[in-house]
Image 1 (tube, protein in one colour):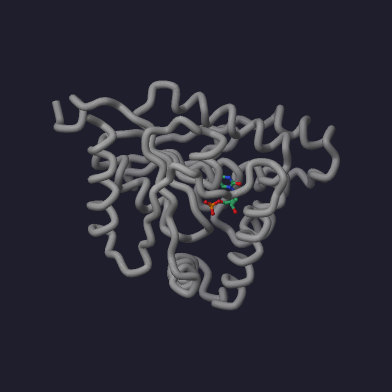
Image 2 (image 1 turned 60 degrees about the vertical axis):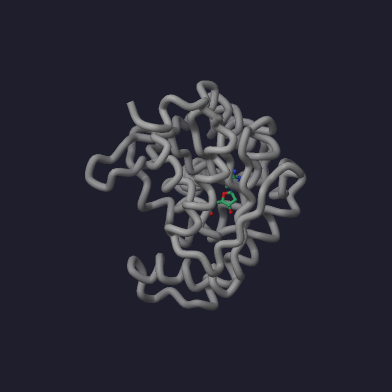
Length: 231
Ligand code: DC
């Protein structure tokens, strides 16, 4: 039995603006603690992909509800990458949901009340047994308001654009820094100003600015906080 398995199982939430490195840190933490990692943004992205493919008019509540009733979301472990992939109705959509077209519409879709209720209910179920690290925008505020450890991740805006650019350029060499900057600014604005569970720092969250931290350094800080809560 590993060191951490003997300790109390907790829920760890990571919230913050787009491209702050939340998923990277959440994945590192989950690996280290042998916890389940859930990228809640992938769920909103998969829903958006479905809406786009089916030409759903998301201003119509009836159409949204019908579409949601047709959606089954699942995370499945990928043995090659060692990570969990997002499955939409049994199709692996992990690569497709990172597409710019999805990024351009996801904040609008994620702002819908029906979409939030649909995703939040599933996220809460995933945390019933604890031992989970989930990243997103409203995880420490709405999904798990009683989580033992809440981390609010921040990073310098220029560094965020640069990181996103490096990530996307490999797949799409036509992408520009300007396009990414505009998309991040637009998503941050919509995510923070929407009516239902906007992005907000939970009052009891701890701040982690990773602008000048290596992956190892940010992991060490977060692990220290986690261990304090696991005793
Ligand atoms: O983490 P990400 O960039 O993949 O998330 C994509 C979008 O999904 C983000 O712009 C806002 C939305 N989102 C949300 O509203 N609530 C969450 N818990 C996670 C993501």
